Image (cartoon, rainbow, N blue to C red; front, side):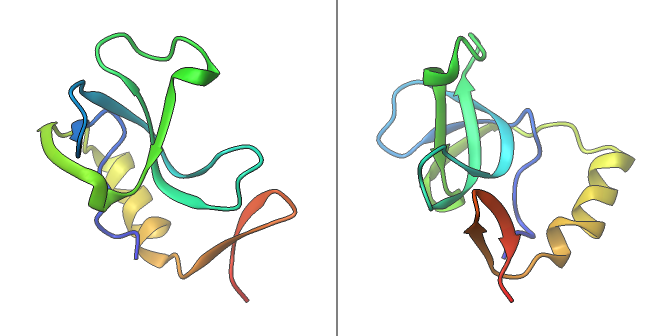
Length: 100
């Protein structure tokens, strides 16, 4: 389910958008929202200007990838040991957890 997530630092265009964003988080939720998103991102090249400058979206909302973030040993290990092992997730008591 989360095997194909892009690395942190990837720069993409979201469908229907006209400004590129940089992925700064994976498997994210918004405060007060019970939905889990694949990514959080900020405007590129501006970066995070405040809490209201974060965007939440899913992988299928990506129209184009402009830059693929760093994929070193640490990223590969994170994919292998965490992302590739995740099952279905839910939000419980404000935390993202695996469904039982």
